[in-house]
Picture 1 (cartoon, rainbow, N blue to C red):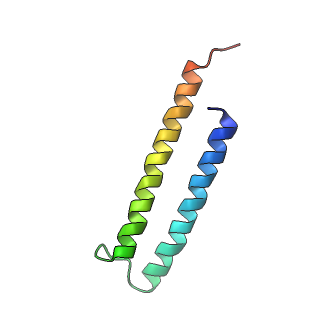
Picture 2 (cartoon, rainbow, N blue to C red; picture 1 turned 90 degrees about the horizontal axis):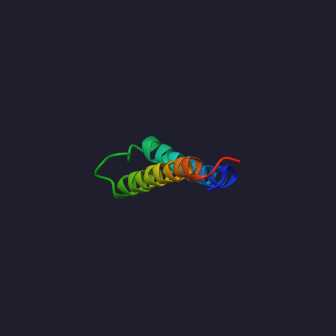
Length: 71
C-alpha cells in the first residue's frame, strides 16, 4: 500500500464519519440518541465498522512500511 492509497482510504473513512456525526447530531437534538433507538444502533454499528476499517488500514500501512525493501 502506498501512502497515497492510505490517504485516499483514510479520507473516505473520515468523510463517512462526518456523515454519521451529522446524523447523530440530528438524533441528539430530537432526543432520540438512545441505545433503544434502532436508528442510533445502526449509526453506532456503522461507526464500529469504520473503526475496524481504520485499524485494518493502519495495519496494512505498517506492513507495507516493514515489508517494502529500502532502496
